[in-house]
Image 1 (tube, rainbow, N blue to C red):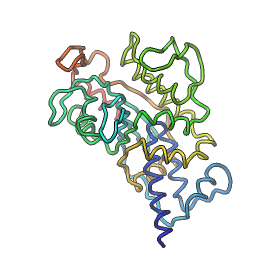
Image 2 (image 1 turned 30 degrees about the vertical axis):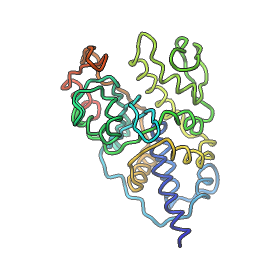
Image 3 (image 1 turned 120 degrees about the vertical axis):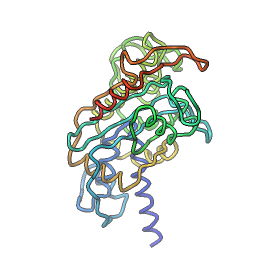
Image 4 (image 1 turned 90 degrees about the horizontal axis):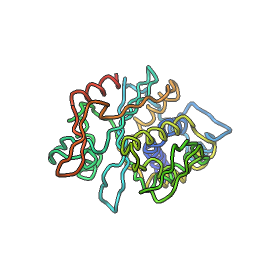
Amino acid sequence: MKRAKIRKIKRKKVSILLMGILAASLALACATAYSQFNPKKTVTSGPAAYINKESDETDEEIADFDMESINLLLIGSDRREEEYGLSDALMIVNYQPESKRVRLASIMRDAYVHIPEHGMQKINAAHAFGGPELVSETIEENFGIKTDYYAAVDFNGFPKLLDLIIPSGIEIDIPYEMSHGIGMTLEPGKQTLHGDQLLGYVRFRHDKNSDYGRVERQQEVLSAVKDQGVEFKTLLNLRKIIAAADTYIDTDIDKKSMLSLGKSLIQNGTADMETRRIPAADTFTEERKDIGEVLVLDLEANQNVLEDFFK
């Protein structure tokens, strides 16, 4: 009985941690969890069979996903010891089962907003002040968007997770040499990038596009991972992915929600990912405050952009 309980806890942990990997692949996380727990699905060959060997059968019924829309907050940051770091990437993923739409909105880290109990600050400071919960509060207060769950990824583990999820790498067409501030040199041209190189690519900001270009590259890589799908080696690496996720990912999604969402993704599928950047064009000004260069937003205009985007 004790052994069975331990295995059940382990399976729950798999579900929660895989949702965290949503930061790299929403479809992979949910589909894997659903396949693992679905009591009516018998798989005798292929990657899913490997997963089923790692867990006992369960008579737990998986409920239908009963939300018309779900908002997931994705945070990428540098974590040092037990402290929260500044968020280097901040995204909201919206999924609507009926329309199969997946939409991703990236919020610029220099957006100048009111952070509860901390006054006017750059939005990336919210994570350092109070972790994912405060980031969620800040987004709701300023943009009127309530997030249902969060997944915070430590960028120190980003390369390892990507190499485990997409072992063959991601093809990127680099427009020009990238080197300053990323600890490597990425040559221009079409090439396949792996973990550390992809981290350098999404964090590069020393060009004419600065943070705007970085946000576009973050969206590009996330979309590429989703489009590339699940490789055979990805599922064979499941144990290593879980171990890495345990160290580098923090998420609050529960098993029930994870499985219901996975069931919906399996049954309904998803359309191409649509992306937006906040603040939107012509809805902000660049100014210097005592905390440095910031983006002063027309909040009402950006609230309207997000409301229309997530309809």
